[in-house]
Structure formats: structure tokens, C-alpha cells
Length: 189
Image (tube, rainbow, N blue to C red; front, side, top):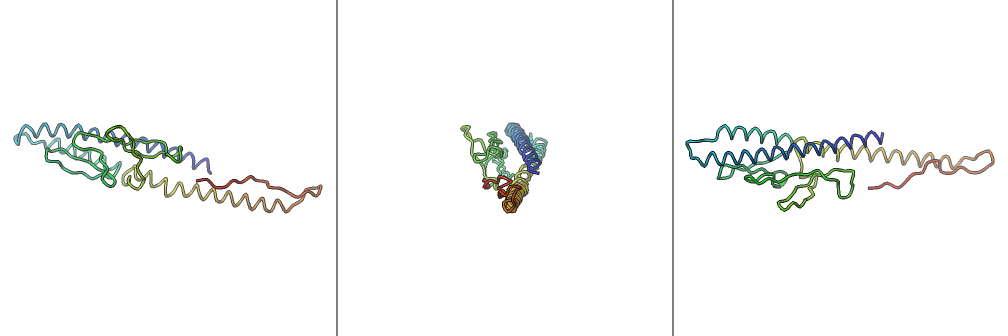
């Protein structure tokens, strides 16, 4: 069972990485669309960018399926996009990328980080990444998968300790007392 849970965890990690790539792609497309809209609107009111705005709205809707975002219309016609508690993904044509990186405390756990303007990575608490596919993956892992794996570990520990206690009460054919049959270890975080 633990191996199966581990396989599911690896699949979740891969899906998180794939979703982050998809989010970054949508953000880049939105940045390109922003640039086209700003150029179109600079031509004057005779050239409204209605079709481009519709395309951008569709991209924003698709992005919102991947991660819950909020947006703000800027005076130049561009759109800024934020997630979590105001972390930027797009400001005008400047994009901020998400990255799926190994966790700082648990290397087998993929975490989401925000790549800053200088290229530095800022680790994001899972509570900031909510909504959409990415939020669902993180929530499933933290609320369901982690709990199931912890419960399985507790069951294995209790079973091993109980079996060992009973086994130590017995004797073999020479009269020697039984020892620990299973080696149990202390839980790790």
C-alpha cells in the first residue's frame, strides 16, 4: 500500500510540474496579447482592439482553470494578473514564472515557487496556491494523500509493536524467550 501511495505521489508531482508549465505558457500568451492590445489602442479610438480583448479574455479564462487568478485593467489597455494574496504573474508585458522545485524539507515533495525579476526563487506556501487544477493537486496531496500515508504508517507501527509484544511472550523449543519479530522505527516528519 505504501508503494502505491508513493506512485500516486510521484504522479501528483509530475502533474504539478506539467500544470506549472501550462500556467507559464498562458501567462506568456497573455503578455504577448497585452503588447498587441497596447499597440492597437495606441493607433487611436478608430482601431478598437475588441477581437484582441476577446482573445485575451479567453486566455484569462483558460488560465483561471489552472490556478485562481485576479486581474486588473491598466490605463494603457494592458491587463495585470495576480494569484494568491497578490503575487504577480503578469504586469503589463512583464511575466513572473512559477517553477516546480523539490521541497526544501522533503526532496521527494514538489513545491511551487515564484521566480522573481532577478531570477531568485521564492517558495510559496501551498495556501497561496488555490483554485484551479494546481490548487486541487496541492490540496489533494496535503489533505488526502499525506493523511492516508500517515495513517498507514501508524497502522504498520501498531501492528508491528503488538506482534512483537506477543512474540516476546513465547518460547522456542529450547526454552529461550522470543524476541522482536519486526523492527519498527520511530515516525519521521
